[in-house]
Amino acid sequence: MTEKITGRQFIMNILNGVSLGVVVALIPSALVGQLMQALQPIFPAATTIRLITSFAMSMLPAIMGLCVGMQFKLNPIQTSAVALASMIGSGVLHFEKSGFNLQGTGDIINSGLTIALAVVLARLIGNKLKNYTILLLPLLVLIFAGGTGNLILPFIKKITIAIGTTIEHITTLQPLLMGSLMGIAFALLIVSPISSVGIATAIGLTGIGSGAANLGITAASFMLAIYGSSVNSLGTTLAHFIGSPKIQMANLLEKPGLYFPLAINAGILGFLGALFDIKGTPMSAGFGFSGLIGPLTAWNYLNQGLEDLLLLVILFLILPVVLAWLSRHFFVYRLGWYQPRDLLLVV
Image (tube, rainbow, N blue to C red; front, side, top):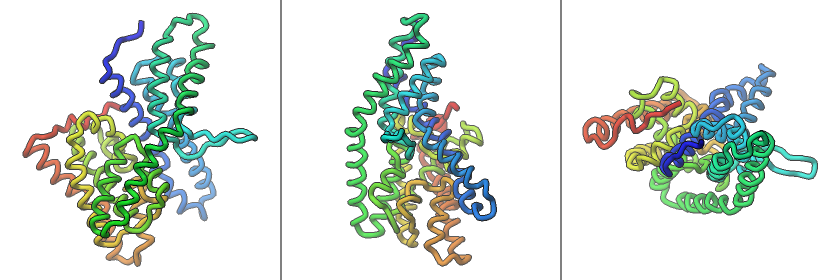
């Protein structure tokens, strides 16, 4: 008999599974992507490693489906069906006359909606098909949930386009104000179901705007890591900035007050990024500290002297840690607005 769950539990299971899936699929590339690119001239296998980790990124929808299935304690057949449906509804598959190819990571919002529908369908069918479950359940979930996800994908993408248009307007503002707002915008995006990298590439975010976006995400990464460091393992804590702070998406949606200190830290770093002319590209914006993509790209725009290296260390490492520590001391220990357990991750 299918265990009954509340609406809140259902939503949290979806969000927690999606968050974990994002980290599992994206961390391999974040850890070695830049390093392998640098080693390609002297280490031929680096190209293969980059392809492997890129493939892992494109498998994000399936990994999210698997993680969500585990959250709901679905059986292997149900979990596999949810993962398959997620791949179809994500938009990561591009169909052509000769077959199909994988591109990007898909639309995370639509993947989440497809997964939710697939879970409902899988739980509804349960064992009602008896001996035919292994034959029919994957087919039904794939066609109905995956097919529905594929149908609504163009409409869901309009949400991303609208957000991108709004953020693009920020680039027309005074540089320092733009830097602060861009930092805040991308800090909020990185802990939402929306792809920060997708938005940045869609609007062609370059220069100071890209640098500020990276610093905003970096601020969010270190703040969330340090806030929850006393209740999370060392590996999970490091995953916030080595991988992605999106791992905390569910916790922030459950405790939205955490967006306030996050926005403060991101706004400060975004402002400083604009002040010191930290730049980036559309492809680097949206990564933050992950894989050192943000600081390494910014380094390419500087004179690459010792003072520039020191500046990047201060902006991308020292200041984010200091701001996170001060924020935790003030909002957690002095005011008691939040607790470390608010950022607890069950991995």
